[in-house]
Length: 563
Image (cartoon, rainbow, N blue to C red; front, side, top):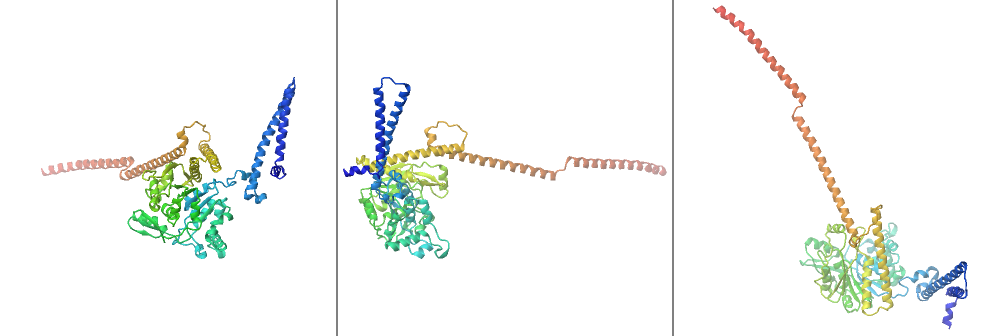
């Protein structure tokens, strides 16, 4: 009885909605009673009765809705540990928060680099039980002044994972990457100073990283795969051995060979505290995406990690890369990626492989082709015993092909839901929450895509009338638009070439005319020279005639005198 009376305390704010429901019931009954008792009614009386009935009915509906809402708020206030500071927390926002009941699946993500951060950014919307096991493998590389001064481990991948799991990633990213420009701290980064201070306070490096979730309000936790020095060494197909991680792609490319195997030096690296326990308790283990030979496989080669994954009953998923990497996975297919993992770690490390559909605009692929990269071949026939799932995972971000965090996370959660459904756990709260969240997110993604397409059409053709489109045109509208743009550019180039050729021809004609004018005389000059020649010839003829006339009489006189 005491527990029942607590619902009517002033702090619960329940009595007002119960009172509203009672008023609604009274008004509804009053309206029905008038209809039953009255023999004759005018139009005004009918209008009053209808109005009273409608007000009463709406009072009942609103009272029930707000009563249930307030019941849920009371449940949140009594169960959520974040309600210790009620003044700073909005209870209404916590109702729809995924961490209210903390019933999300326990997911372990193993890898490093941007691929790992992409998966973490997407999964944190579905569950708070995330553990990121991150590579620490920059030993032997060029150290920054900050690392030299503070003497800390290479923590770039760990820092990026912390940023990805934080509630305010953009602000934390600016803070963690900040490098002091003046004073005694010049050249030191905030992240290195923070990790160094946390290590001094907690006297344990692993504990200092695990407590970052409390300091930065992270969703999940981050663990280094090992605290020992881990140097990645590559043995190439031609027998050449590369001992520096950063030089592996360069040497492979220069020697025109491929990587035969990867191993750690020293080979007895111990896993960091908490790594094996996290794998053992996981509901799903995600490997990749990321650089296959420098971020993915080295984590699995740490002592005990691969064995713990094989012995785990969790779902084991590998997220394949979208593009190949020059010097590492040239001409690799999806099955080649999986085969490389199995060759290094053995069978039982992967149950499912999720890979992209490859539906990417060709113009963006050409950019990667110029750098020696290409789409990962979708051949999956060479590996047996693994389920390959083709999903749409890619997006274009700032001109680069990337994994979409939301699409990758939804593919993983969908796989977990299918597994729960296979275990006949449709009524399990975890399944119901994940399935509803998944449906809601898919609807939002569809709406966002439709809005983006409409905005693009309005920007390109603001006056064009809307027309019904086929499924093909709606699905491949981005690719069709890019092809049209490429055609327009090629046409413009052809026109420019034709214009240049026309100008060159005109210039050639002008040059030939000027050259001929120098070699030949104009018609006026020709007429003048012809006149001069005619005058000369006429004078010569006249001179000859005069000479002949004068010479004839002299000869006659001479003849007469001789006679």
